[in-house]
Length: 207
Image 1: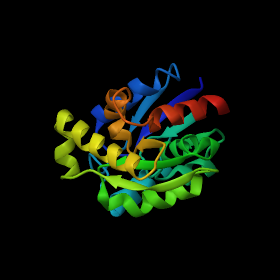
Image 2: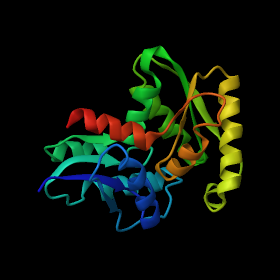
Image 3: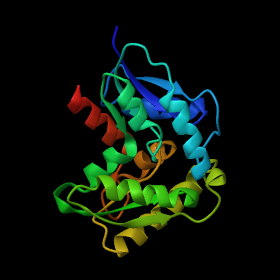
């Protein structure tokens, strides 16, 4: 039986469940996969590279479609080369959706240690859009993830800065930030792109 799989490249099973719940609204039947090793949140380039190895080597029998649900899309290309099914990264999908129609867009995220890889990924997949940069929250990302109110305030401040720099839309940059993207969607100064939803739509279009 064919399977739709959302891969969480970090080792936090609760994060996997939260991301699957969002994807299920677009892709009925999607199931979760959690990295067997690694950190509970990817905040450095080294952790991103390690998670790419976990994703690329994963055994996914009968996969009909896969979402790689970390914003740096770790291991996506290697997995796509190995599997005979669509493999969508949430970062690339969000960039493509944000840049539609030539829009100016930004990323708002919590992980300064990943800014360089985020910038490269956004520019590679922006399409006709113009990427205006990565706007980072203040404070330790792991602590922010433990306090939803503080996280929302920090992200809203980043969204406001992005809007002030001319962004027409903002991507909330991170799979584990999926629930925050849902909470903030109706309150932000500019439209938000939720990467898990963007990837689910992109995968649905390719099935």
